[in-house]
Image 1 (tube, rainbow, N blue to C red):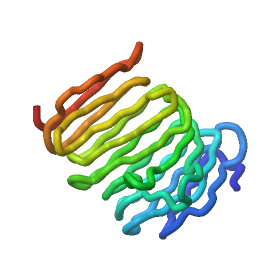
Image 2: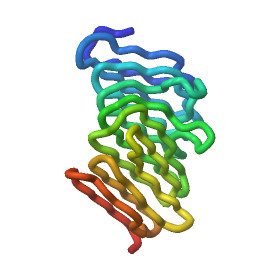
Image 3: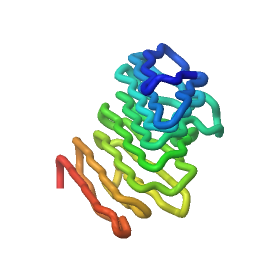
Length: 178
């Protein structure tokens, strides 16, 4: 537990429990291991988790992994797994998978104000309360999204638009292909 404005930790393996106590407190967690497993991270402010060495994985099953205002997740070889996504409670989510074909799997407990995903032609499934989602299927290059302001980018491959509904929010899509 930390009462400072920002808690910055460098982890090597598993982040079992991190809490940044107090109003507006933030967590910044970085790692360079082949897989960083997340237990529970809680902050009143923003939470940023980066693993430059590999994937960010769920380390506690179906239990909530991250609670924060804006949650940013960057994993070199992915974020979550289809069989065990990262569970979040946030208002905004930004997720990035850097390696070719790396995946992003997140389940959000609430509705979101905005959702952003960036991949290099990897599958993406970010699901949130109220039926909102951002999904990208790499094999068909199909993007579907609804329920929040949407930003999506793939730096390798194409994007074919399915149903995109941001309500009154904005939509931004970038692709290296068509």
